[in-house]
Length: 253
Image 1 (cartoon, one colour):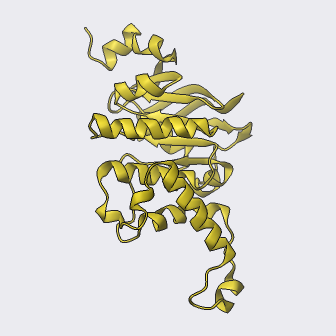
Image 2: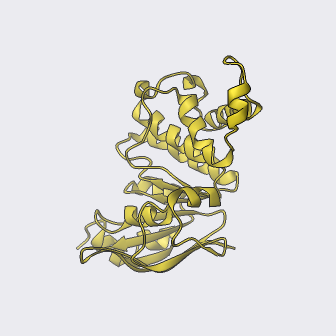
Image 3: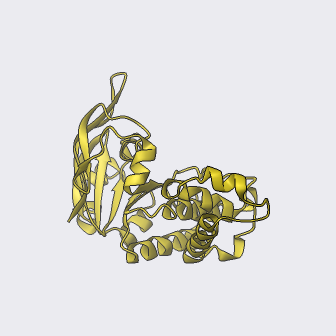
C-alpha cells in the first residue's frame, strides 16, 4: 500500500530549483532513505511534506488525500511528524515536558476544567499525556533522563528526545532529517536501533542522511537526489552501487 505519493513536486526560490518535478512513492511500513550531496533538495523535500514550505507546483497525497496546501499543524494532525537536523529542544524544560508538548495536536484544551481545577490537581488528560510520554521515553531508551533539563542533554540524547516528541503525536509517517549527524559509531547505533524499533510499531519512516552506514543498514529502499532531481530510486544496494550515485555523491570519477 502506498502511504505517501508525490507527483511533479517542485520548489523554486527566485529561479533556483531546489526541488524539480520529483515523483516519489513511499510504501506503508518501509524505511526509505533519502541521500544526495549538499544542495540536492533533501531537506527541501522534508520541509514540503511537513508543510513548513509551500510547493511551487505538483501535489502530495497522504493515504490517498491531497495534503499539498495544508499547513504544518494540519499535516501533523493527519499523521505526519518530523525531526530537525538541529534539534529544537526547549532547554529550560525537562525531557518529559519536552515530549508532552508534542501531544498538543491530539488533545483538546478544557478551559472550564482548568479554571475549576485545584492548583495542585492534574486533569485526566494531563495524566494520560504523562503516561504516554513516559512510555515513549522508555521506548527510545531515555527513561533515565526523564527529569533532566533540555540543556543538560548530550547530542545523541537531544536527537532521541525530538524523535520521542514526534512519536507522541501518533504519526503514521515519521520524517527524520540527519538523525545521526555529528555522531560517533556508538551514538549512531543507538539511533539506528531506535529507528528499527519504530518500524516494528508499524510507523513508516523517511530518513534523510549523509551517514551511509546508517542508510545501508536500515533502509528498505533509497532515493538519491542531485540538484533537486531524482537520479536513482530502488533497492538500497542497487542505488548505493549505481554509477550515477557514485559519481555525484560519493565522488567517483
